[in-house]
Length: 264
Image (cartoon, rainbow, N blue to C red):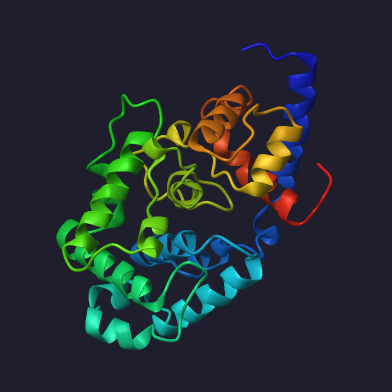
């Protein structure tokens, strides 16, 4: 693949920022939480919870995640495996996060308990919907979210907060938080864990929020005007010109340049 002069310059800058944002530059980021653990299941659960809460002001995100990890006694897998909804309702009554009520959080853990008991891990649950022939993870994310909502709906009617936890790319959502979790699980480098080796990093789609959208618009990596799945796919497609096997490796740097108001 031959790059134009402009593309070559942009790739050089992207590669520079990718190397600059190593593990010493993680904070403040929800990725700090799963990096506390060594056990596979602790990492997977902490990463999932951390991604679900990754919206809004970063200080607010970190505060909410500190509370939840404290309530899990910093043993995510044990907490999920032993979870009872009734205890969860009491335990989480003082925890809220923007659109999520304490009840929403209790139902999230109820669904996680169901998944780990019945499927063994989030990875095996997700792989039910993954097909190697798919261009990217759009279809798998859609089925994963629908099934999660079905688990909760068997116990209680699905609230606005729960629906927000599990958006659907087929309805246009950029699914930033789900793509973030998948980046952490599938990619492998100083930042990301690479625990889900069954899926190629080339299938990932960039997690797009306002920071990523703003910078990618300036860099002419997207022509879309609003954050959507279409925008996420377009940016990912452009980044594939710089690294077809691992286009989403640039995500952390792009996001944090925006968050920290740095110059690209």
